[in-house]
Every structure is written in structure tokens, then in C-alpha cells.
Image (cartoon, rainbow over all chains, first blue to last red):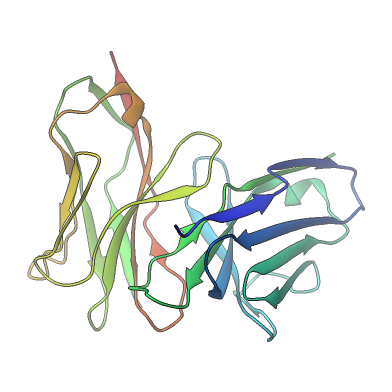
Length: 117
Length: 112
């Protein structure tokens, strides 16, 4: 149990376009979802925290107008990279915390590799 | 604030060697501790966890014991395999709805 699915797993887009990444908890309700960004050979950088039905909380330095996060239901959160530029190319990973039971662990999606040309 | 420190990698071992990846933490309260593994091109998978002092998490031959007195959660495996080659992340968290705090990750490379 506790499966998180991310889609697409990879995407290539032109500079200036927008890309949407979906994150779904398949077999549990996620009270909170987190979006991370990972650069090559580096750790995960938390971008934002989203709770179902409320606005996402962004980490310092993350542009909320560029990285739009919507948490429409207890099983779905989306990250939209707006007006993407090459510097936005990265590996984006979502994670979810289930409602119950939980000792705080997160369940991660497979990740989405974005390449902006 | 809370933080996690992992040993620098990469760690290169021969098959069947003993593995230790050190992890220490700084935290207020009583966090839960986790080890995650990331295989190339994939997301993170929970490897094991411990929720209180002296708990031992174990999975797939890996073990880690929550040591409050030394604020450590070192990952060990008695005999590594080539398939264990991956990046390993130590993390701490709580139940308050906040995100996990990750160490920088340690790359393990096992050769046959």
C-alpha cells in the first residue's frame, strides 16, 4: 500500500511553454503533499507544501507564480511550471503523507524529469 | 533548526562487503527517523524507519538503530550486492504535517 504515482515521468518542452505534472496517491488519502526539486548529484530541495483545499505554502526563494501548485483533492496535487526556461530543467518529485496511520513518513512518486529547450 | 548530516560519498565497495553509512541529526523533540533509497532515474523509496529511541528499523538486510544518546541513525548491511548500488538518504520528520528534512545523500557503488 501507500503508492504515489507521478505523471509524466519525463517531459521535454520549448522555452516559454507551461508544463503540468500530476501527483496521485493511489491507495490512500493524502492529507499533505510536498513537492521537491532535485538537481544532479544533489539532495532534495523542498519547494512547497500543499494541503487539500488550501493554498500551497512555498519555501523561501521559490516563485509561487512560476510554480503553481493545486491540491484539488485528497488524492491529487498538480505542479505547473509556467513559462518554463532552461534553468527550470530538473527532476521534480512529489511526496505524500497519508491521513492515518502515519509516523511522519512520506511516500514518493517516481519523479518527473523536465527538460526545457 | 532541525538538520541531518550524512557521511560524504561516494562509497565504493566490493560485493559482499560490510556497509555503514553514518547519519547524525539535530532536532527538538522526538522525531521519527528514516532511510530512503533512490535508484538511478527513479523517485525515493522508503527503506526503513524508526519512531523512538532504541528502535531498530530493518528491511532487505539493511538495519539502522535510533540512538538518542548519540543522535545517530547509521545504516548498516552485512553483505552488499551490486543491486544495492543507489543513493541513500537519511531523513527526520514528525507528525506535525511538516516536510521531512533530508541529508545530502550518499552514493553507494557496489562492484562484482
